[in-house]
Length: 589
Ligand code: M6R
Image 1: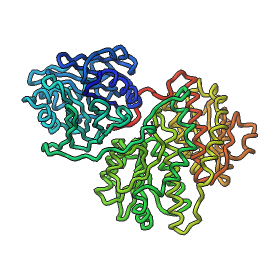
Image 2: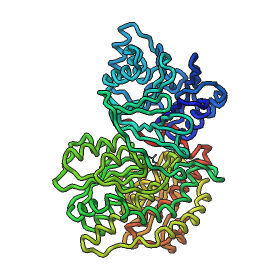
Image 3: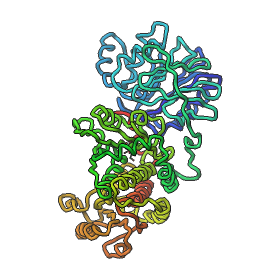
Image 4: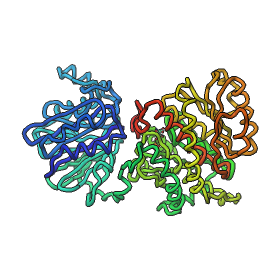
């Protein structure tokens, strides 16, 4: 959610900033801007739209600068609201949300100060400029002391034209030395390069980038010694490699990722501690948002069925305000691709205060969630660029199903096997290309429905979310048995209904719902592991996927649904990688 990049050093800053912003564009893409200084003059270039809109600014001369790609929270998508924001001698870029911005702004306006944007970020520029007494670090620390909310900041001051000051509170920020200079960014990929030494700031820390040195301190200006991040350059690379879109590429990566996620499960450094907790736990809570929430639902089905341990799955944004009951011995599993989702982090903090042991199923190393959790179980999905989560969902399932296998063994139940899932997923990807033929039935539809029971229902929810977020087609995922309790009223001739059927003993029950929808004119599409259903007259088209343990089937059945969303989005002329109004990691409440 918004991207920050900054550079100070011997090279020209503008190309570094613009290249970094391309890497960050997946975090926000409604407007973009850079500020570049040559020591005498600060040039600010801002545009609405994507990074390519400021390509011409590559030629701006200057060795220090800051850049930003925005996902609007306060104020419309306009040039005025784009970052960097300036006031007097200050220019800054900001990620996060200042919750008390309105009150602060009212006070500043009553003092006669004029604002040019509707953003909360401009308020920070005013606070810093007003507090500046010849030391930018002091001014930034002073201003941050007045802020409530979250921020990652990179600040330039024309009175100290050789330095950048950075600050972090609940919004990720990385600083360090790269080639011929110092860098700051909200995401490793924007600044990682051969030989770079990078540090992830913690909440409440400030950094000064000047000369050839990065110094980090806390609000009391006490120096903080940071540990350099270990990163794999290859992992951070975001190349299309001949694909038209990252989403399609990321689907193709799933089989290999599953292999890594499962293979490395017991190699997580905290595994033995996690195992000890798992041995004692009688109750599991899962918190997550969006797609990660759906993987939590899949885990609940599998854990309760195969391990007979009680699981509750709660949307993180609800958990935090529900005064949740956290019995002694609760294991809380927080699932997040980015590890930066504000609602999930808040839920985790609350659960920890209430005594839960927190295990994070997370993709991004050094993310905030990894620092909060007692145990970290990595998903090894690599960088996911497409805003619509695909491979990270399957990777989360691989880790969660590995937990199921371990827990089943602890509970002396028959341990389910994960063997063969990666190969079966590869097969599923190849048969899923058939959904291309389904798109004409979805492109002009008013709405679409996804139904299933048990694990199939969880896949239905995820299939529906995927379709709506990138094709903008209203859709619902449902328990098949619920259709007749209201939603059936929405079925009209031609309405597409996708049924997921992978469990033998409920297959006929789901087919009942299919018959009910078909009799009202619905066009039926099937994702199933049973060939006989594909032949039925009611079925317009189907994808026959390999069989696996029904409790684990979403890892396969979701693939054709991801592909369906992708092809429908394309057919409707949308960019599947960057859906409107969305951003990759939602770091605001
Ligand atoms: O980074 P997280 O997994 O915590 O993100 C949670 C959701 O914001 C995310 O899954 C979102 O729903 C995706 N856009 C879904 O494709």
